[in-house]
Image 1 (tube, one colour):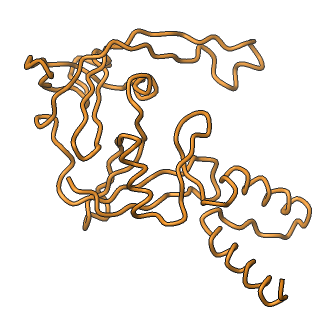
Image 2 (tube, rainbow, N blue to C red):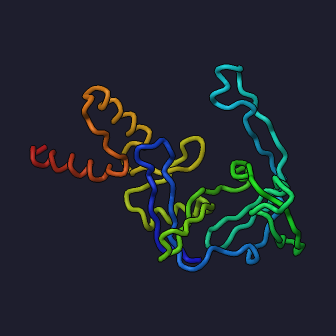
Image 3 (tube, rainbow, N blue to C red):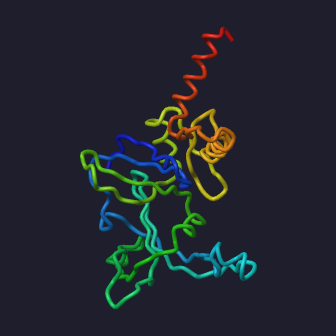
Length: 220
């Protein structure tokens, strides 16, 4: 797999955090090509949902021991699977045969996983979407090592920077507001003017260019 481009899905009009889309030539590494570490981590989950907390009281965080298989590819691609989370009699989609770094081969059952947050205690990774060049519909969710993602952003996304918002890595326009700051600003204008149409965060460069053009015309 060779990374040849990238873009950001800004999720204009929604509260979702911006997401990195990685364009690549060649297939995503097969699990048979990778060698996995066996990790014993801890995962946490809420006992109460955000909606239940105000009614039933303070949330309680449950800590769960996790057995995770983790591997890195030279391209920066990361793969991992939580062992033993199958929800039925058949092996989950994430299960299969894995070769460990010590040469052992194991067959695991796995389905839904809560390891994506816990894995960050072992490695600095970024969630992103992979799209093979020429394939308009074949998107695949996955992870990159953070240092590789940073290089991808620097190489292919002029004017964009990565930053940690406290809950993980995300993206913003360099020298501009964060997406949440921009949406709050636009919402305040909308409330004040009523008929004002909120501008999407993805259009920040155009907004900045227009602002600079007006300043130049005024001779500022």
